[in-house]
Length: 310
Length: 312
Ligand SMILES: Nc1ncnc2c1ncn2[C@@H]1O[C@H](COP(=O)(O)OP(=O)(O)O)[C@@H](O)[C@H]1O
Ligand SMILES: [Mg+2]
Image 1 (cartoon, chains in turn yellow, blue):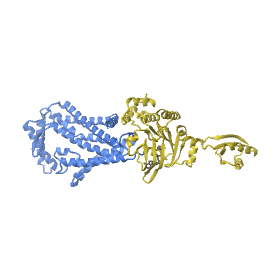
Image 2 (spheres, chains in turn yellow, cyan):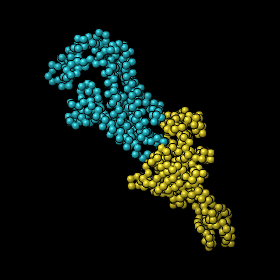
Image 3 (tube, helix red, strand yellow):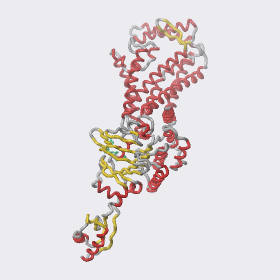
Image 4 (tube, protein in one colour):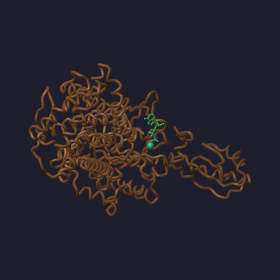
């Protein structure tokens, strides 16, 4: 495996007028990974992607794709990239096929066979000669993926690819991206504001908010929390009294009552029997205990302080 | 580069709108030619002699008036010797032959201008307004190459239109009047005397000079197109500027500096007819002025297109 990252962002900053949209972003994406780019609407995901593919100028810092500078060595750098930026907008008055011919002509070495191959890959064989005007959103998405894969890129960038897809379509996309990384060693960067989807799709996730990188970790860290402390929910008779009692125990990190009246305790696993014992001793009835699996969503809200729109 | 040009052509010719516009243009040309043919019926065959003699009489009458417009006076005084030449040398007038319609059709070049402005005004702005620019610019082709391919596609398109105009008017007039008098000369009053000119050569010159002004109009529309996000605005502005510019020109004619204005120089046929916008303006002067504007406009298009952030 090559050690050179596919994309390398180095202190990337974007200012428009006085407004700083992207603030000193630095991270690498290694080869073969599905990399998630996560943030609420307006966080700057699309802007970052536009800079990566050379649609927008970079105010400060630099972006390298396979070691080639996107600004000074554009044609060499972009050669390895297939992308959809926001919606896959195609020429509506052309057929799906002619749209692909259009993009195929722009990269040397894309044959007619390759076009057919990509068409069947995205399962558009039956409708490919119809005008794009008649396509549904899902079909346009698939045509978008087809144009991005035409020239066998080593890096695929998809900006909010799940927008407008039904759950079935999202699952298909996920499986498909996995397939691509496994079989062709493609690196995939997907952005999303839908955290639950990232959770299942990505290897690593970067979270950005208001143009700043606030966290970057393998996805398991977000979903399972740290190894020692976990959150448990106790369904008890009198939660307020229970809190007063449990507070006496040492090694409790957090203690609260959830919206639906459950007692939430963040603590080490070994403390759970002690808590139960104490509750029973104090005549508080316990109806159930369960471990809370923290979703990326919760983590994300925590990190971004409620996830206000940036 | 060839592939980029093929792409731009595909986007022009595989689109219904283009053919509707071309169809409209063809319909105009055909209709105009039918009207001319109808009016010219009496001059067919040997009728041309009577027509010319009547015309001469009318102008002689007009010239007796003292309050006659200066422009008309020159036109009539130059026209009469031409009529005499026709009659004396037994050279029939183009009236009542296919040449009349063909020559007149060349002046329908305004339709071509309009059409090219519409397509050129749209060619860049539409990529932005529909969002397709985002997929177009993330390929291993520099922006300058993409811009150039669009420009070349527009030049090609205007040539196709000029050719269509020529072919339609030639065939239609040939059918209506008969393919006769092929080697008829065109009479022209220059330098105090009547000269015979080759009809085909004259036509080629007209088309060539029309072609140059079309290139200028493409360049303007192109520049405007690269500045706008909305294609409707770009087309509207391009047409507006061209027509307002030409109208404004009339008002500014009394100022000496108006000869440096773009629109004072775009119509180069003014030199063929010997009626320049300002006395002392020459064909090479106009071509020089046009060249400066040409470079300026293309520089602006280039700067705008290559520097621009593709956002929103
Ligand atoms: N051309 C621009 N000029 C000024 N502000 C912009 C421009 N483009 C985007 N923005 C702002 O930058 C921020 C990030 O936008 P964007 O990258 O589209 O976010 P995301 O894709 O994460 O939803 C937003 O606050 C947006 O208003
Ligand atoms: Mg976005």
